[in-house]
Length: 294
Length: 343
Image 1 (cartoon, rainbow over the protein chains, first blue to last red):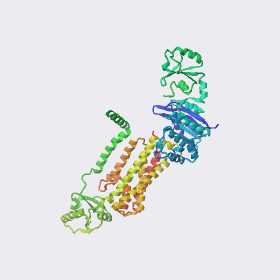
Image 2: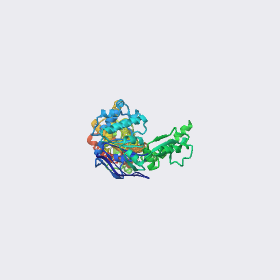
Image 3: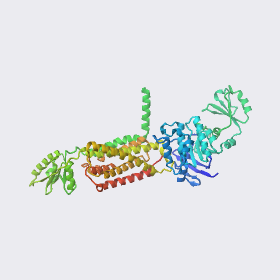
């Protein structure tokens, strides 16, 4: 598949912090590329450099093989993490406003239907719920029939159901052949939606590849989770890590039976035990020493 | 209850003090206002009478005639007889006098102040050694009422506040809440955004100014000696210059408090120096020169020339030219320095 977007050695320095440290990646057409990392990793700064909002200190961005310019602005759709819309305008008027700024135009009725905004068209922007607002912002990102869509933390602040609904919407957009660049700090979101991810921390990409391939490369085992409150003895003989923010201990093992036998004498019970496959959060923790969730 | 009040009080004070840019303007503005008022009004008690002296030079020599040493009178040199006579007719001068031969004076018999200053002139003329009869000319004409004179000032002031604050604050708010950033991600250019803001505010201000003028004119029968087309042109160009100035102020500011401070720093001097409430005629040269940097000064000069003096388009071309030049300068600067997102 052809490469739609390429970032080469992007650097952005702010006073006291190197926000983007020689970041490079490329995105193939029709795929969903994810930038995964905790808050402050440099994901949004990287994406805003690519979008042309922030100038880089050095590096290059190529869209369809050319430096980004007017063609990029016409063909890219962007949903920012934090943005306001004009007060006193309705949903319909907002969509029409943004579509009028482009030469390329999508079928507005289809965009409205895809984003489930049909019942909200005459509602004032100020009266939208969080989920409704995110759907409107996505619709605004789609009004120009974009080839490339940027979604910056699109489900932050949404309840689980709204998140699932949004994921379904993103999957439909991707199924139509639109290329997506998604930034998120939710590992489940990255795993579900992205064909390829780049894990960022402290301004650098520390791992990149297909989510399953990254996990298979790193892990041959499963993870046993136990609440800290259920531990009654000394676990120093068993390799484990404590996640204080979640109140659990995790033990990675490729021999569940032996590990459970060792645990039996150190716990008050195993009723609240979980056994799961390693996920991207485990990968991030192993690579950086700290959690994705702060 | 007091605890909660204090908590919010304390938090607000911290917010204010830590916003260094707006804090400094809250201090700078009153100090600047104090110096500005001293600059304008520092010349002592204004005189009771105003007399025009028709002569060739631009300074009045008190030693040349006893009348020119009369107390509580401001003597203003005039080189143009017609201009002086017009001001006497409109009670803007209490009397006009030419002391060189053939000595003559012009007075409006309906002017009470003209009556008393005429007495002083005749008395001092008698005292002059080898005095000759000073010839009298009576000028009739209705006074320009203060409302006729101040109406353009009030409309201009309203336009100024609407153009500067109505555009400046909005742009700063858009920048602060990220809406400008959202627009930046589209093919919209800085110039296009700026032009749209100008057009929007211009439409609104023309409509409101026309409405207020029409109502005021109908109720108070205010004076309109000139052409409405010329007046509309002055209003449109004046509004564009003020909107453009507001865009310059808002081009890079993120803090609404700072924007407010900067806009006040621009509007207060304009309000005091552009002739909104009182004429600057007779004030110091530095005061009058300072006023020329403000668009509102030229708007009001041109508007009053049309409304009170019946000036035609050709007469106000200098003011129109200045407003056009200012607008182009402000728009260019605003488009060049415009920042789409907060720093």
